[in-house]
Image 1 (cartoon, rainbow, N blue to C red):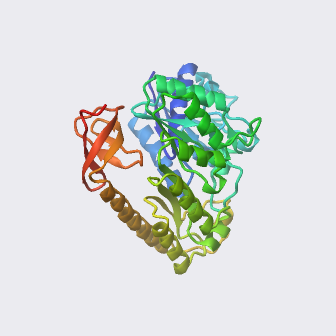
Image 2: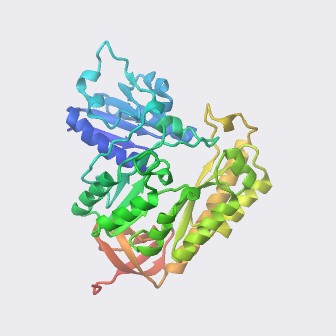
Image 3: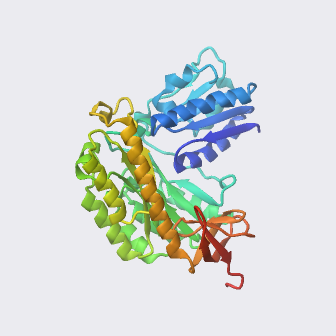
Length: 421
């Protein structure tokens, strides 16, 4: 089948890309490129449009299908592009019928097939065999978001929060383990809200405990970005009790200043976030943290930005995902007094530089230690704390004990311990 998918954005999109390939195959789709877009920033939308033009230029004979968050929030923008044959909304991109050949060119159908995402109330589970070219597998546990942070367009691209039932999640992970995957990553839009829409309202922590209990052969379970204020007691218990849950969490922080957090309509304070980091480190001393941080949010002063810089050091954050603030039409923040773009870019550069220092410090602390490393592709893997490691002579998919011997520019260097049991 001559169908190619191009995926932008988050890990959830990467998982959905695999499902889309399966559903397109069921529909008999051929000779097409499906572009799965992201809408988190204006730059992400620009890149998606650029990818559409390039795809058509390089493949003039192939149909171009656009879907994903940007297709949902800016459907007509993509529909008006001459290069695009079909625009599919986020609610329908995981269904085979959306890719049926009869959809194309029929006079009864507009090429924009995007429905009201806010009316969607369920997320169907999809069992995938694996993920092309990856040693770890992403699994969707939840979709959508019920919160309304003032800067964020994503709830309008993903719809309300809805969860995949626990039993189906366990079945999916057992299938992946049976297919040789040693690590699984739980993904979603707001995964700490997991279960609120399911019977009995199970929490993310209960889901994690269930997976670890019912998939005993799973060697590594990783959680993607979390809204830490929603972390439940069962999740803390899992962190403390099972070493298969990886000691790396990425926080949806956004700022280290209380007033900016309020203006963002976040639900945590600076002290809340620091307290959660301290609590988790007390349970797992080897725990490391990353965070999303927005630089140059409207009304952010130098003093407010300094609080974000200080937070990075105080919480000892290691992996920073930094965004210069990008106004999204239709969000409250877009109407707030802006910070100059040049200032936002400068602040983002400062945060990234600090993040690089923090990462270098973590790497230096690992030299001489033995790390458990998942080899993602030949000769390159990641530790339990998600640090990249160059391990010459190793093959993708293995989980090996590796002695760290040095630090290179952006990774560790190690040697496998050949005699390890």
